[in-house]
Length: 209
Image (tube, rainbow, N blue to C red; front, side, top):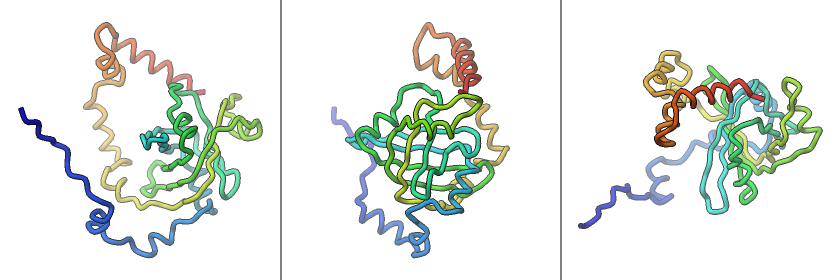
């Protein structure tokens, strides 16, 4: 039997550029190499970011980070610090950064269409002075990520407008899915109680720090 691949063809960078055209000069000019006063205020109001890393082979990972607005600290105009709050302990980001220190951040503010992108290099730290600045409810993180900023710029809101992310009417889509516990139980196989999985998740959510 002849196997026919269903993978779409790969475009070269030149073909991609030919399809997209060139960016406007103003778009490229808005990319700067530091955190200015506007970026600083955006970060201070942001309770959520997506953090992207990749290992030495280029295998990528993107994970969510969230806390009270301003949980990411601006140490100076070229340096950020991100607390490592309790999570699943898989530590994909730390493992990747040990092999490849490149990092990409996408900051969001609820209700705002524009996002802030920051790219640079990162490494973990347990510096007491840095961790103390991230203390919440008498607890401070065991580790933090220090980001050396190389690029920072605002990204237009087309994606958030198209997705209707902040439109309350779109939030009803979540009701069409099984609960997280039910999905996890199905993936783990027979003998796993969905109700127990849901209770476990709720217990974890109550222990944020």
